[in-house]
Amino acid sequence: MHLRSITPEDIPKIAEIHLKAWQTTYKDLLPPIFLSTLSETAFAGTWHNRLKGNPPAGFNILAEAQPQGIVGFASASPEKTVIPRLWGELNLIYVDPAFQRRGAGTALFTTVANKLKAEGYKGLISWMLAGNPSWDFYRKMGGTAQGAKVETFGGVPRELVAFEWTFD
Image (cartoon, rainbow, N blue to C red; front, side):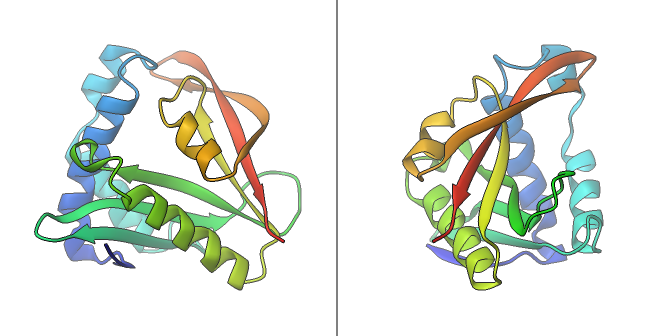
């Protein structure tokens, strides 16, 4: 597994994976009409903004496997909550559904955590939809559920759960 920073040339493939992952992972958690409105074009626009520094002060990495090419990605930043503390936030981590459970997610997560720890962060937080099938992955990586909030997707409120990791 090769990990590297995301470049603008990677955006079309990342947008494709992002869309597939949302439609697969959240098919039983979010309204079908909402999922049907998502597009590679919209995700590509989000990624163009992200690589331009919106949101600022973060980093983006991808996982490549041979011969498949890009199979997943992750994005992290300083924590974006109202509680001031020196923590990082795993904003996104998605692996192409066809390549899950082959080590890409673990490699991405470990790289994000190690980079944040090396930069002096004291811990890591990541928000996920309650009922997310990746719950076991977060636990396997040592995370513990520590809080919840509600956000609206397609006009429907859904609970998000905060997973946290404290660095030693």
